[in-house]
Image 1: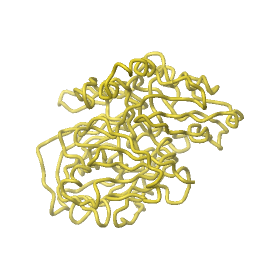
Image 2 (image 1 turned 90 degrees about the vertical axis):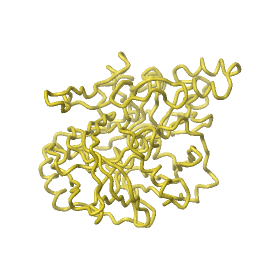
Image 3 (image 1 turned 45 degrees about the vertical axis):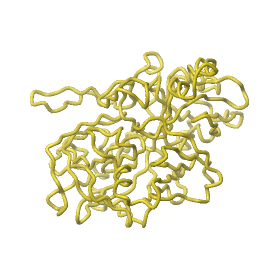
Length: 435
């Protein structure tokens, strides 16, 4: 985790991000190498988030670096190994099997074109576009990964459209095309538009990014270029048994790593699912009303007390509009939120609010944090919100400050809860993951 930028974020409510300028030929030039976290303004711009909430924001996808010098020295060897021995994960009937990379991110496989060309992708609930490296791309990241050859697909349809996407960490640009897309053995999209990158920044280079591309699971409203998102294509082409999907992310080296089941979900969780509404039609976001510690009454969510104090004067719709929002995001490595709330949370448990570190000896004395989402309480135990690195003996919180408004409940939270995403009824079901 790059904690050096936490102090900057806590003071200025922003962080280091990619600065995009245009060269004389009109192509983007990336000036910053440190793509850690971002503030609220960026290339991804929506006039409103749902109803009435205005502001610009970057598409999430926050990835921890986590690379030590030895890993960086092995970069060339890793590149060679990957290109020669590309991992082949078989596609199952309606489930995408996911590989866990150090709890930073999870990736699975899709096939693009006819015959299918196989790519490893992050299935990302925090974005809505699909992209894979393009054949003409000359960025180092593209040279290190598989590239789509449109001439090798009999069903490929070209387009004059070009696209640029700025993520929380990472930038890509490319050309848009349409083709068939195989997500599992029984799930094939006949007409899915996607980007073939012509440029990728350092974020997507090896060894940090072992995946080739990205498969957005958000709604079309969150897609760059007004491109129909894959989940909306699934519904339109009627390829799902039911219009939903379930996601299971396991911690560490637990068997199976993770999975996404399309058109159904693990029914053993049915009786434990707590359903919350989705706010807006962009991503899988809901309202956030509070953060509580143990059995203490204090609400650590900055600004929530003002909304709650006025709740008797507000309609349910007005309260939802005034509340903070939280995005459930499989593409982000940590929990991200406003610096005021996170500093107070860190201080309460005895963690350094600037570095996030906490004495490992303090863990047995800590209490759970409760996140109130969609009006319901979801609990994280200390071992779920504190990361213990046995190699270094360092313990640190699994959160990082970014936006003052939109919270991002990333992998640590989603490893705690099995989640079901109901496309038709715009709701999310959560049930505590079994060990």
